[in-house]
Length: 273
Image (cartoon, rainbow, N blue to C red; front, side):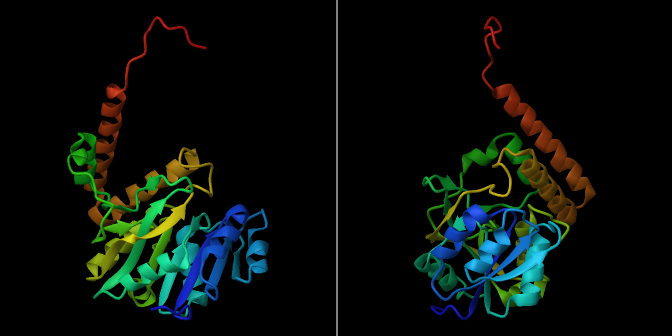
């Protein structure tokens, strides 16, 4: 697949004007870009129009999943859809590597290797949240076999910052669950795709740049942390049930306590201010 007429790009913006130009400019010439704006007050929608994008406007911030669902429902006609954060960049050759990966049998989703603008590696795929995984992380067992991001593989789910999906698969499972307002929606979607016998592919040979946390004040923003926790909790509740959610939360608290105990102790005699 080398043409751009079988690909639509969907970008959700919320006060993203500072990133949007670079995001769109990196895409191959002729790519159809649909921007759906979640009631920004920084002129994001106007910037998108200046760039020649097709623009949809929400009257309020509907969240990521609901915005994408609307864009796909009203505007997408291509065989594949690239969901791209405004603070992410992917160029033509790397996008083509993702598109080639969708040629594999029952491959529904492809995601690239991610680095921040300084070149620091970001985690591009994750295991699904579960009580078992939370307890493994709480006692440090996850460190025994760290993931290998240097090779392509089928994975549970890839990060939604740069997320290429077959439109057929998207529509088969019904798109994003809009109860996931900001985080967890791509994990839930990929879980439902796996349940429907689709595959999710991490493509190590494809590279994208991603700032991260551009709709907040970075990963330490309380707003970001809150919605990350909510998304994980909702995933566990949806796919494992209430007892599992209780176990998951206890494991998360236990892990936090163990990490706190492992921190170096400060000298009590040291004067602080």
